[in-house]
Image (cartoon, rainbow, N blue to C red; front, side):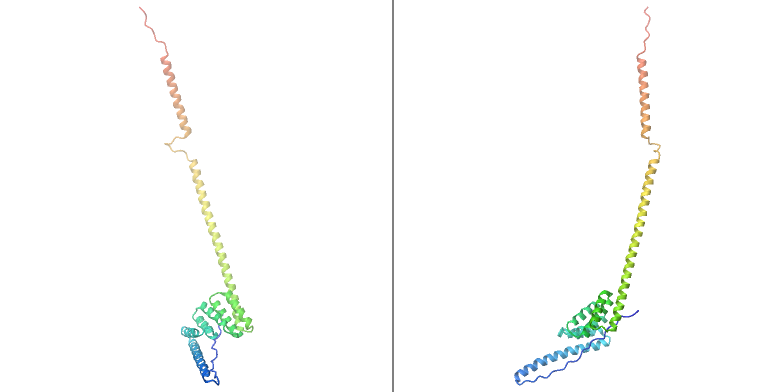
Length: 253
């Protein structure tokens, strides 16, 4: 698999101390002190950045990042410090922080090539985070500033390919989830239908079963009561007939 290319660290150039000539001694002295202070500060910043570059080249990325941070504490408005700090973060796998540092560096240079390098590295950081769409936009910005940059063209092609793979994987995952949901719905419907069928079968069996031996049906109970009433009516009728028969009189002698 092709690897994402990374631009070389920006080392910048060393500054020179300018000499100031003036007729007025006192004003010249004040200017000298100001320039001396500025020169010392600039040398300190440059020293920190150069030491950070050496540490970076030795693979000591944490130590190099500390040097670049110290340089930026003295002066935030410098391209080299922000850009190099982004490179150290990149090597440490801190891609979000790398993007932030590279973006900061863009505000402190007017050089199209420097801006192109920063956008290139922003794209690399996004790709490492699998944020391919953001990486693609960064590479496009880099190519607008340096259209002949072969490395950026290659990385852009790489990011486009990875983005398409990511979309394909997401579509495949979505389809699998849909199929899984369909299968689950089918299984649930089968279970529901089976349960409904069992309930219907139980209901039919209950209706078809004869009443228990010790239990009399409604029709049978009515028939028994009617027969009982008929027996009682016949018994009462016989009793009335006996009471109403003629009594034999004795002869009167």
